[in-house]
Image (cartoon, rainbow, N blue to C red; front, top):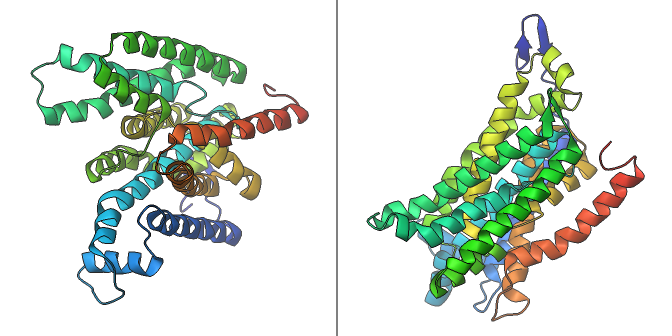
Length: 366
């Protein structure tokens, strides 16, 4: 059968995607574009949509669309455009990682931040900032720049694997154990970050504030390329696991009967999620609740089919983070609110509502 996942005589059919799902994904893509145009135009230097198009067109060698000032061109190309594109990449990576983990653990409360993955990546990045120069003083600057995202990736991978192993017994993942393990790991990594903070110098302390609260203020084209390179595997490959995640909704035993190689799917999701989250933490610090809220909102609106849920969550996460960053840099301008504070202020009430809703439908850990 074309497009089916097979194992011997068993197969999991590749059913056609409903028009409603395709239409919803198209609307979400338009939302990302619209949010991006608003974000690049709003700020101390105003840039109208026509001027944005003119600047982008001139960069491609096409002129005469609209008049714009040199200062507007400089602000758009050097500051706002890489920042908005980084917001899109980070929001999409966090949201699709959250959706994949929720599908793997079969619970809407799973999230890279809640189960300790983000804090593990942040601890590794913090250790690199504070101890990197002392441990490797002769390391070239270019290698030191690459060391930070690599360390964040390894930290996220370690915590992901630990949570998964602690919560899984005899092929069954205990949601209560998973969340409790995440709480314990968050506390442990927080303590480790605290110890490193005591050892940090004044310049390092200013850098550590960036990691603990999250910010897109340091967005540059090189940072964008690093995030895109490290998160691209998750954004490309996780949607290819949509049918396997759909089968896992029935249970691991049922998924195996349908020909899904469950352990390989688990390993792929663990690796891809750790890579994506490590990249976002390395670039922007800790940004919470995007990986929780975006997938669940898509699930409420469009259902649990991962063929729609995964790309839909990525698009919604991108749009949400673009708008959150816009609020972070404009609400108290010329100062800037750390984006982690904005997403937490929006996400924490959503998480409380989600817990109440889950409790009313039979309990959190059923």
